[in-house]
Amino acid sequence: EPLLHPRFMDMVSHIKKNKFYCIITTNFCRITEDQMDELIFLEANELIINVSAGTESTYTDTRRVKKTTWNKLLNNLNYISKRKKELNSKFPQIIAKFIMTSSNVHEIGEMIDMAIREGADAIILKRFLEDGVYNSENLKITGEQYNKFKVVLKDKLNQYNFKKFNSYEGK
Image (cartoon, rainbow, N blue to C red; front, side, top):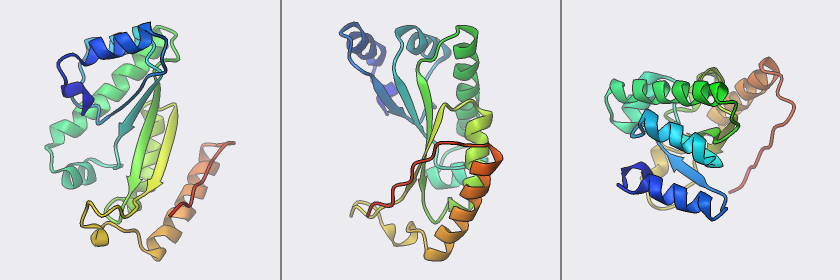
């Protein structure tokens, strides 16, 4: 979590002063309103927020955190989206990222709804891939789960009238 570093904002400032593209990947629970305002002011390019849940219960169960953490995430998403609008800023682009596992794939509809409701500029849906680090047998999505996922995804694309959608079926 980059926001744990005491000089995080100094690093972002240095990156932007030197005209580099700045992408921040975070769980977005350790950030303050002042830091969010500064990210907008500095025009950090992308804020990739790993959510990987559509409901409080799945979020708290899979991450083993208190429900206050879920509430903090939603409050932060709401705050930065509103501040960007107030300041007429397109930065940072808010990207909601969801790693699809067997324990959350059933919430694909809720994930997309939440991301749109909270003002995400883009959504990343990534299927969990075995990398040898996790005990992944219980995290892999079954064929049946994936087929249900595709149906709900198609319905959500139609519901929200998405014109652009990229799919990557990498192994």
